[in-house]
Length: 168
Length: 257
Ligand SMILES: Nc1ncnc2c1ncn2[C@@H]1O[C@H](COP(=O)(O)OP(=O)(O)OP(=O)(O)O)[C@@H](O)[C@H]1O
Ligand SMILES: [Mg+2]
Image (cartoon, rainbow over all chains, first blue to last red; front, top):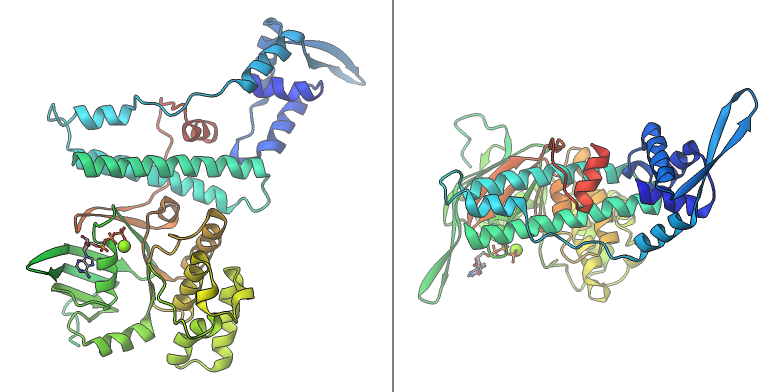
């Protein structure tokens, strides 16, 4: 949540509720609406860390609202975050540990482990496909988020099949 | 055809199905004792590694190749002993088949390929044409109606094959990798059509490597070495408590859970 808020503030200063709306508009239903309380807490921490600063803006007949803007330090951290590659797929996989080790100890049958993991993945795929079916008017960002999850899941299923071929 | 002694609610049922290919001196058992039921209106995906017998199973279930042993029941009637021509009549009326490698008629236009099954089954030319126009439009290939299949890309031929199989509104659609040659935009067109056909009550048994298809299916059958390794309903996943995976899916579920 920290970096997306910094990125939105790099565009223009905003108050908490505007940031919530901007996240919703960008990512749509694929990225469930962030809790406003969580946004305020994150902004407060960012301010304590010197990454944003706030100004009270007076409003008629309402309490003042805080408008946040990025500091130099915030801009630096954001630039580093944007350009840094993110970690690739894990080599240590918890399911694989179970698959290899459990049968050795007589705890489980490999085919059963693979089947139950596969069923779970299919269930996730069902969720994603249902979501995709309701996305005719979603933003490209929202659709791509779901499509990415689908592709990752396909890869996980293909790998499960390889495990089945080699280990069962 | 004999009647089923017990009432059978399944649209398709196989019992102890075996398919053995003789080749040279030896023989290969491509299907080794499959029991399978597909209920009316059900969408079942068959998955499994290459060479596990998926195409063979589908061909035997559709009467395109004779079973070596075992029973096949279609719409409550025994079908495994039928002659090839009796099977052809049964398919014309009740089964749409999409082949892994299309099998379109190369001397006819796309439009005629799609209209032919309906005409053979007794539809009027007007009905056949209307249905063809709907299907080609849904699959985004209206512009190719007058072309011969040889002028189409693999993906386009695949969609024509699916349109042809659905032209008759068959009781059962048997499809072998109908998204196998498609890019993701075209796959989405095909999936949308399948989703709609299924919602309209179409019974579907489909071989696929594409996990997206499994996400639409009611059940997934996993074939391994010619046998069923798993046969399970697809149920929406619940978020697993206390787990967090740092992958796109993990984060995604974390956020949406
Ligand atoms: N006509 C045939 N004659 C001899 N053997 C065959 C014949 N057709 C298939 N086989 C063998 O039967 C086995 C199953 O083949 P099948 O085509 O059913 O696999 P599949 O699961 O559909 O694979 P793929 O995912 O690659 O399409 C394979 O070992 C194959 O070599
Ligand atoms: Mg095949």
